[in-house]
Image (tube, rainbow over all chains, first blue to last red; front, side):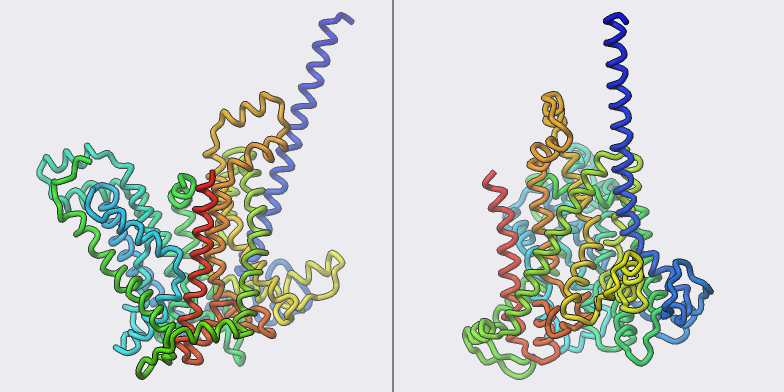
Length: 293
Length: 289
């Protein structure tokens, strides 16, 4: 065997080993990631599958992964025997109002911070920033006492409006708007656009991804809120979904898990779907600020 | 900036709706709570200022200390499990084929879109002692002790931590993943050229670079979990034997069930101090770099 052949063989062997190693490493990585996928999805799967099982099957010692006798009775019961349709409506109304209001106020404030210089700018900005580390409960106590005195608890107003004041929405939209070129806004002004025209006709359409990310952020917060409605609302007719489901659960006389899971599925779908539709924008919008520091 | 002077009032008009609402629903309530915390107010009738009485009572209240201790241990244990897990997931996602990585990332993000109330209800069913799949699974791998996840003071805290870890890990791994994309490629290349193994590279080069983002995640997740309320309130209402009582649950009980508004307000300010201290930690550590 010539020397060059030896070299060639050795190199080849090393190459195969390297490729094998690379392949094994990739397989191991995918294996671990798939394991985490199973852990992540198992509770979600159980929620969905339990919602299609009769109560007797949920409380059977005989475990089965798939529903043995699938049924939609839980969903029928949920709509026929509980106030669920009303809670669903409440959640939709409150969340929509809160999201629209929050994105509206947030985009205007974000625009002011991104594209204007004015007195007290940094003071106002830091004031909002500082409030991020103040827990919501500090505001819940006075707002509840005032609102109950003037009879405004048990209203859509108290459910939707105060939580729409969201500092994250301002920061997020400020960041998106900062990315727009000043020249473009300036030429619109030269063409005679008013400040409001610049904002509504140029800025808003261009930061649609940012508006989407902020909207999802507000939507998720409002849709899943529990403590706020728990404090602010007493009558069943104004319950939102989380409060309604928690109340169903706390009723020991008529605890129907299948029905609870049916409600949970319906309460979860709108956020999960909204997220899946907009995930790239949402994740990048959310993490951008964090990475920049 | 060129827009200066074009319109002096425009920025203030754009800020007006947000800051008006911010003042009414944040600033004034924050001040009001502080005032309440120095009174024995019950939510009705007149104010009676009692100075620091509420805070003194708080320091002597063993149940409050219990709630404080519970909350701190939840925050620390939860972070100790969640942070390494989120980092490992992010590193693996980063090493995986990009297209595959994106699909995994989507799945890992799903739990955070499930509301805490639903998480509590689903885990109640999952962890049911006799009928729940978790104990079935444990029995299948030979653990027959049938842990009472929902009724024993020994296991209930772990149930709470488990729910938090399940819901938050994927969410925060997205932040760590974004941090990984921000590490300059030449640093990693230089280490590879020097012959560093992947493990050494991760430990000595990548992790130190991730420090700011890990700190950010730690602070954010701590701020949120110091306000732990929904799941333990729905499943345990503080029990069994106060083993799952958190600051916010005790505060809620006192303010809204026992009508001790002043006492609750004082508690809310202690919670605020803790959270502000944690937020400042982030700036301190980052400034040192």
